[in-house]
Length: 479
Image (cartoon, rainbow, N blue to C red; front, top):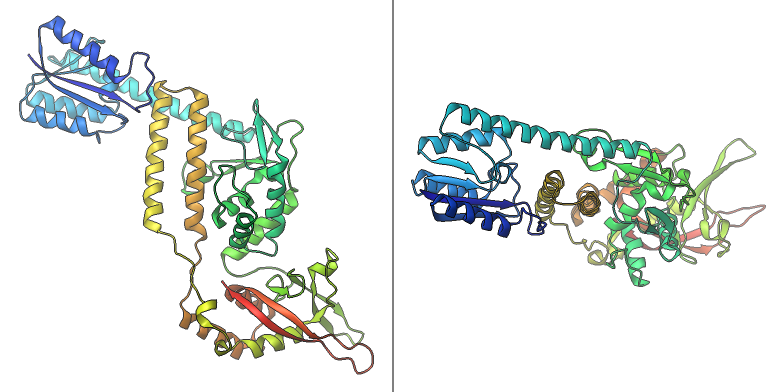
């Protein structure tokens, strides 16, 4: 009898406990010798799951069956060969058509009779049921843990240390987490990343910061004392909604308040749509920056004695931190400077319109597909009992972190207009400024500009003959 021996392991890291490729090879050859058969072909799929037949060695085996090069297909165990009932039926039909027998050296299977084929099908059905049941239990267990406020493994988030399953603050990193949340109120994630890199600060993995890693920190509810799970699956419409629950670790110390975290999430949402939504619409709030101290101006108002409203902007450096002495600036003064300055001929267009490198969407999508395959293989290993639960959780968490980062890149990529579009857009805003509502003005300014630097030329003149201040725009940065 001409024998084709088939072997498979899910990964090259398979444990040497009786299922490695070498062990399978030794036992298959011993069985062939005991039967007096002849080994004519040896097929080995290393690092492939049995969830489907997309395996190079298995494909060669099927071709050799069709070319009548073998008389018997020999495997160590049925689950090394196939796990899907439909795949098993197909392979049995192919072998039956070309009069090729199937044999497991550790199990009693006989495909020469209808009863034998029925028996092997029943065994395969039970194996598939067991595998799917374990997978469902894994998911349900992780869902239940997250609903109870427990973490489902993974490395410690940046800003914390993990010791015996307990998260404690790593102050050397925590200070930068707080800094990121504070800085985002007046700066974009890209500027924050550049700032951290210039200071020599690195991520928990020792890598440089990017706007995407900054956003990942900002989106993580653990810093407010909450755990999140199933975020990726929910985003793809799979299984269940994202679970966010209060972290139940005793004496856990959040790095920011829940109110601050919620506020940042709303701010990120507004910026992602390139328009701010709020009850009070100040077009230049947070975009206008003080030349003297670099802090942002925020809008405010007070009622006049005659019943009108005085709208103004005040420097955060003065009113929040006390590092500046710039007085409040009337909104009309900033508007006047804004409308007078927005002529591109006064600036080097190439300097201000330089485009940031675009991300390679296809490369990211291919990497996401690759990660999904890795996760499936790791899940197969856990279901097969080839890796421990702790290793499974660690590997899945690492892949999940990378996948979240890639998805975030696709979700938050800015759509940048070309130079002519920007020029026409600004021209249109300028020409129609007086007809726009405060909300529309705000949306337009925040959509076009990342920052506008304001210089005080002449302070306001109070008292009789009061005059608003005179300011000028000395710099701006486009989105």
